[in-house]
Amino acid sequence: MPKTAKFDLIVYGATSFVGQLLAHYLWQRFGASAELRWALAGRSKTKLETLRTELGDGAQALAIVIADAQDATALSKLCRRTRAVVSTVGPYALYGEPLVEACARNGTDYCDLTGEPQWIRQMIQRHEATAQRSGARLVHSCGFDSIPSDLGVDFLQFHAQLKFGEPLEEIKMRVKSMRGGLSGGTAGSMLNAVKEAAANPAMRRELANPYSLCGSGPTPKTRQPSLRGAQFDPDSNAWVAPFVMAPINTRIVQRSHALKGRPWGDSFRYDEAMIVGAGLLGRVGANLTAAGIGAFMAASALPPTRWLLQKFILPAAGEGPSPKAQASGYFDLRFFGRTHSGQALNARVSADRDPGYGATAKMLGEAAAMLALETPRSRLKGGFWTPATTFGQPLVKRLIEHAGMEFELL
Image 1 (spheres, rainbow, N blue to C red):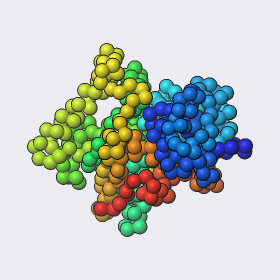
Image 2: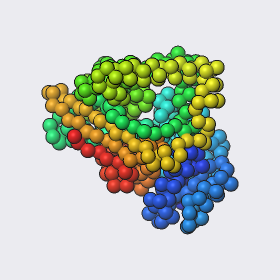
Image 3: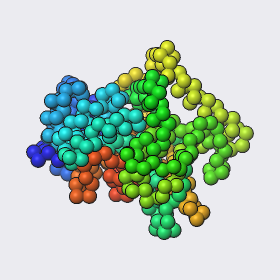
Image 4: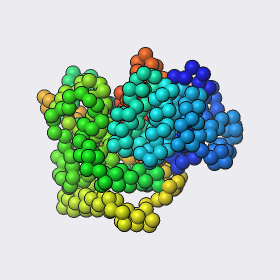
C-alpha cells in the first residue's frame, strides 16, 4: 500500500457504462463520508465532472483524477494516491494491462470485472512476481463473472464441512432463470476473445484447458465436465444447454481451489450449464440454445460476420440495458453438490437486479470497498487472487446485507 495514499479507493473508468453504475452505487452506499474515501478517475475531465453532477447533492466533494489508460506515468501517480483501484475499462485485453502493471509496481490493490481468461493468465505470468514483491493484491472477475460462481462454491463447501465433515467432490452450477441485457463493453470483450482465439492455435488450446489459471504446480489428472451440446441433467431433472459464462467461471473456481491448496481433493469436479426445460420441449429448446451459441461463436470468429454483429446486432461501446431493464432483471443459480461418500447438499444464489450490470455494480462495489478497507496484508499477501480466496464468506455477508443477493441452502 502506498504510504502517502490520500484515498481508500479510486474508480477508474468511472464514465464507462458499468463505471457509472458503480459510481452511483458507491455514492448511494457511502456518499462522501470518511468511511470510504473514494474518487472518480478516467481520461476525460468533462465527462467525469458531468458524472459527478449526476450523482447529486454533495457529490462535488468527490475528487477527480485524470489519467489515460495508456499513460504509464499518469497511472503510476494515480496508484500512489490510493490504497486500491477498481477498474471498469474493457475489453481488458485491449486496455487493461498498463493499470495492472502500475498497481503491481506501486503496491496498490486492484480489482476488476473481466471475463477474459486468456488475459488473466497473461497478467499472472507477467506481473505476479512484481506484485508479490510490492505487496499488491490483484483480484480479477469481481462481477457476475465470477462472484456468484466462486462464492457459491465456497459457500456450499463451507456448509458441507460443517454438515458432513468432508468436502463436496463434485459441484454443478445450473442457471435456473436469468433476465438481463448486454453492454457494448461486454460485447467487445467477447468478440475480442473469440478473435484472438481464432488467430492463435496456442490460445485455443489454453482456453480448452480447465486448469489454465491454476498456476505452475502439478495439474490434476481429473477430467472436468465440458458441456458442448444439449444434455439431460438428472440433478435438475431437466434438459440443459451450455452457459456462455462457464469458460471463465469454471477456471476461476479451479484457481480458487488451487490457491487454497486443493482442500476438496484432486478429484474435485465443477461445471456449469443453463436449465432450459423438461420433456420434449426442453430437449428441443436446449438443442436450439446450444446451436445458437455455436452459431454466434462461429460468426464472431470470421471478420465479415464479426463486422455485421458489431454493426447491426450488438450494442456499441458505452451502450447497455436501460435503468428499467436493470431493475427488472434478476438471476437464480442452483448449486448441486455431492461428497465422495454420496451425501448431497444444494444451494441457491440469486439477485434482484440485471446480472451483468445492476447486480454486477453492487458486487463490484462491495468487493472493492472490502479490498480497500477490510483485507489486511497480514492475512493476504501480494499476488493475484480470486474473489473466494480474497473475500470468502465475509463478502457473502456483505452481499446479503447490502447488495440484494441471497445465498441459501436448499
